[in-house]
Length: 77
Image (cartoon, rainbow, N blue to C red):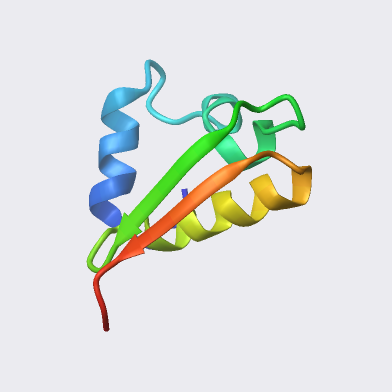
């Protein structure tokens, strides 16, 4: 956990059985666990979404792997 958002970090700690051990964090890391066998995906985000950058990163990884993905980003700056 990188501390960029303490609320999200705390939610992760509360959700995970061992409160965010390195092994748990590795297991839930979507980007590190994607393969070309990942299913076709719909990725969306919006202005004010705390996971906005993550959605963009997921779409980029899907493209890199050749996985079909539709991406929508709602709202304007």
